[in-house]
Image 1: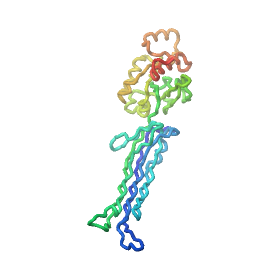
Image 2: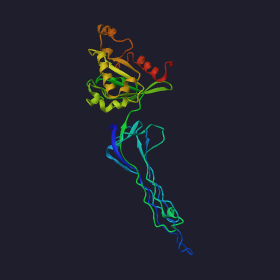
Image 3: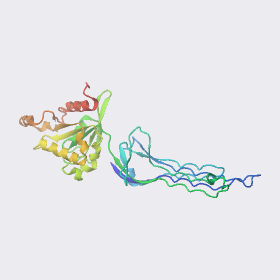
Image 4: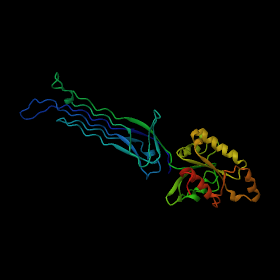
Length: 327
């Protein structure tokens, strides 16, 4: 099951208490204070695990606590530090503090773990309170509690290209045509219920990742259909490809509606480079194809089913991602 949102509670380890102790050895019956400090509580960190692709595990386990630090010992021995707790997340996960809205981590592959909750400091033992006026302090302090947070985990797929269109526009067919992905394809709306990723290989050492998200409907920005649930997955993309069905009565209006929904959800999406693919031209007869002359020349006329003009579309995407000088 694909899950891209979860809430969890984390609590870093408490610091160990300081110790009250006095040196007691043969021939030194009244030694000075030697109580050690407590150890630091364990931190909680997050890191990317490229073998994970969903937040499903966090639907079932919602509380994570790091070990506490050890109590200070005799002979000025500091207690052991609590072991850090490492939480593994799918690459592309945004970690937010629910109370403040602060983004604590943007988990990406190959990057070092990020501390999201700090363990508490250890308390001081009585040796730390010895002074010229107090040679035998009987005071120690408790360890400090670790940080507690309620976190939002939001997975945003890491893709170069996002396919955007209304239900049944042919996005999944196109993804299957250009990549190794095998999304569910059928001739009815909302066949795609979860985002699909595919790798498009265009040269010996060149490739890019394409994301196909469930179809957008009017009102998607406000939660209608499946749009709001998955629009986050195109926020990281470098290029947007709008897929328009050529059989629609007004293709330009469809494009305007799609852009309006994206803009209402996140205005920065409209700043991304984009192109339009008019799909299913294989279903048009000669007369219907002549009418396509009214469509802007920079729109790609394609058939995801037969592959017609798909290579030209891919080459245009390549130029944006890798630069215009590619062969």
